[in-house]
Amino acid sequence: MQHLKDFAIHARLLYRICDQQTFFEITQERIKEYDKIKYALTNAPFLSTPDWKLPFKIYIDACGEGLGAIIHQFQIVNDKPYEGPICFIPRQIRPTEAGYGEKQNRVPFPCLGFGKTTLLY
Image 1 (cartoon, rainbow, N blue to C red):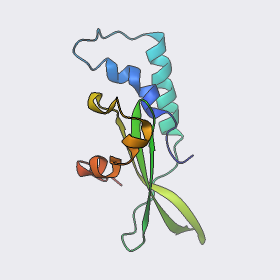
Image 2 (image 1 turned 180 degrees about the vertical axis):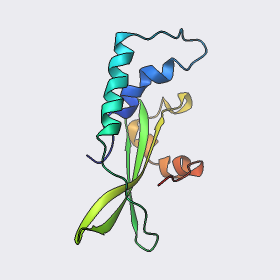
Image 3 (image 1 turned 135 degrees about the vertical axis):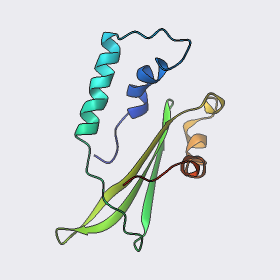
Image 4 (image 1 turned 120 degrees about the vertical axis):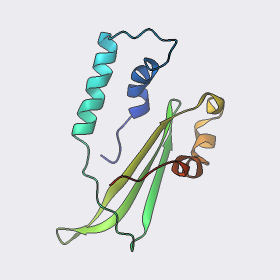
């Protein structure tokens, strides 16, 4: 697994209860989505510590609900080359971006996504 599949879709219901206009109610559907996210996070691949001397790869994806980027790096783990994640950067589609297609949202994401991102490793 290289990312948390459909994270934005599963998190959508949880994000919505943070809205001031939404009634805070714990429903079975929200519990189910929370459990999916919890399972995905606790079974996710381990993050590697970045080696700043080696090149990075950036994978970008978009769907109707969100954008995501994953920073990967090839490293030697147990004497074998291993491409692993260094950082995951997900975010929801903003209302101003909702009218664009998935391809248009993917293009500017590295610039917009990393501008306010702190890499935690």
